Length: 312
Image 1 (spheres, rainbow, N blue to C red):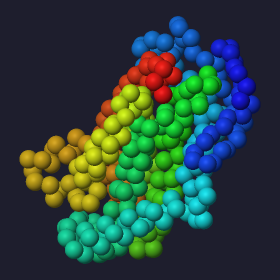
Image 2 (image 1 turned 135 degrees about the vertical axis):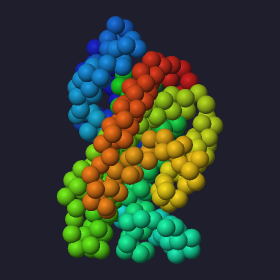
Image 3 (image 1 turned 90 degrees about the horizontal axis):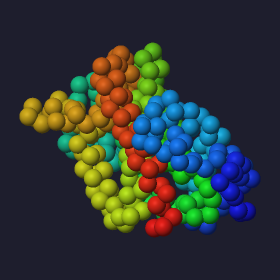
Image 4 (image 1 turned 45 degrees about the horizontal axis):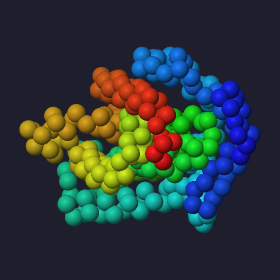
């Protein structure tokens, strides 16, 4: 790959390596940020308008990396992208058996027996997988893309965005199975299901913000990936996915309700399975909180990224 200068505005090809895979993609790269630009100061980084404008200018590059990230997950696999459906279905089968046949939690709205519980469970799993898959990978994301740090003047903040967008696309594909399941078991679809994708706005914001926070730290702290794996596992059981929030003892119920993933999971179940309107106050508050996390993570990432080349 040929050298570039600070004023570089175009790179003819990007070589993306995942294991033994190399993918060529023609993309556009916007000029490297300099002191005084919107990337330099904390206030500029936290400006929502400037934030949106920066990524709009890089939309072609972002789209290319999202495609590459999605394709790399199943490169060489015989089933290809079908694994995005097979894998969660296998997990669903195990959890459904354990928690609907063995433990049998009482869940309002699971009128379809095991099938009804499976749909409720799967709606939660598809949302949480976006969070867990992206956050678990974030600490090693920059190490996996070291060529972009050392050889190319490249907007590194794009990498977590492509990771999260690919995870959201994968999750939406899996969520279509929930919609299909509701159609099969009830014979109809709820009009409120059209509002289901709104849950991915706060979910993507929260996940992206944490990825921007964790990716730089993972460069300096190699044990972070192991720590995050444990934390994500604990958070899974602290999110009402396998059980209803009403089953939690009263002293702990309000504490678990503070989990920002709970309104996301609840929104999907309300709109797709129960046919209820969203809890707009809860969803709105969660979106605001997640937006703050996203902007804080973005600011942190852009202010420390100049240090990556000295460490990776």
